[in-house]
Picture (tube, rainbow, N blue to C red):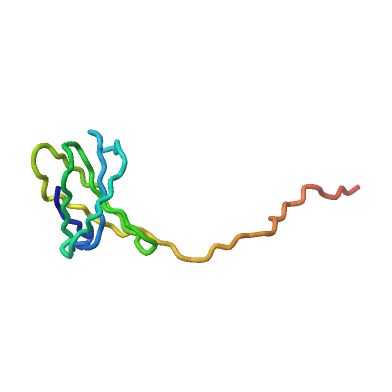
Length: 119
């Protein structure tokens, strides 16, 4: 199986990405564990995985590391008795958030429930 990884917005190739794949059913739901390829995409975003058994699969890219918030859509494909080419995996930049979390250590005051009665 071979293809390339591209940026979803610009269409430019994404280098140095690891490809993962898993078996999926007819509804494109994952049915097995995720397999990670030790091969990275080249400078043109191209990749090639060899020795895959016939079946229905989906390939994707997952961001690895603290500085990477990228993810991809799954690209479904079928392997029967010949090579599969032209798989395109589109990578998207995920959201990040920065800031400081402040934990409140004092209890929140409760409203008074009693009141004075006047006669």
